[in-house]
Image 1 (tube, rainbow, N blue to C red):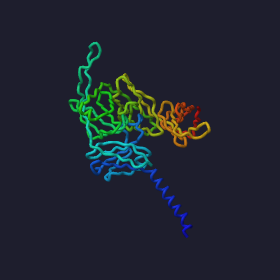
Image 2: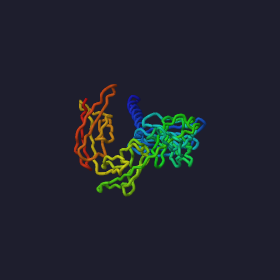
Image 3: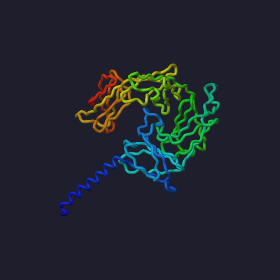
Image 4: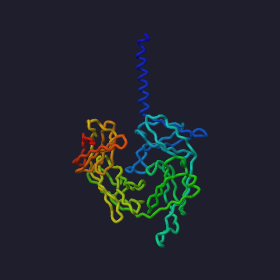
Length: 380
């Protein structure tokens, strides 16, 4: 009878609806359009969207694929939640875009490739009632990179300066926002510049000035109980994206491109969760040392005054990198140094001019241990 079949049909419709919604929440789609015709085949590379000082620059890729049909559907393997996708293809300018799971398809307009010409030089200074510049000495062999997303972004196009210090970098979409230029040369400090108006830059043949910078020497010492080789790690200079180096098998390392008046904090990238690093800074007058030793893992929750979970709170130990709590107020901190440590949580209400809520507590940690159910109660 019709009235008997109606509930079954309704159940099937509801199941289909929620099934489609569940699929959409686990997938995303990016589409490409070309003003003059069908999009060409494209190479897509996905990167984490959290491009920060604690990661290499450019960041390691999550994965890559080829698109022939002008549209591509992706899942958590390439986009855990949000990602940066770089697209490249013949006859189009390489570009980037932010994508997210569970959102409507993102449409990207492909444009012809742009180019940027310029020069790289070292100022020739002399003293005459103050320091003055007599001109510029060409810097040959400098690496020139157009980046999308700022200093911590992804590389879109590269070039190398010739013996006259001149370069022509081409193949990127010059109409994108947040384009930057990175210049690196051995023995010189790294330079980052924003790019505004590619046509103006090309006509003016912009000059990029580099200053001499001595390389900093250091060593990485790995604790014997860790199954880890120094050559598997990467050293980063915090606050100086693009300044990074891999130690040799003996742990010796050289960090180039650091400005002469800066001593950068050294970050070890590639540690397993149960390893930690000692604090270290570069030194012009000596050799810095980074010790890698067994670390602790701390897991717990951040709670409000009514003992309710607090999502999106910041949690950190000492001067380490903070992490955010999930929707259940839970957090996990890895690479924590052993010993007496202070763990801190902070949450800021959405209301304007509201003071942040803070709390902290002391923990006695041992290397190689996992500490569960650490609760932090926020206080106004």
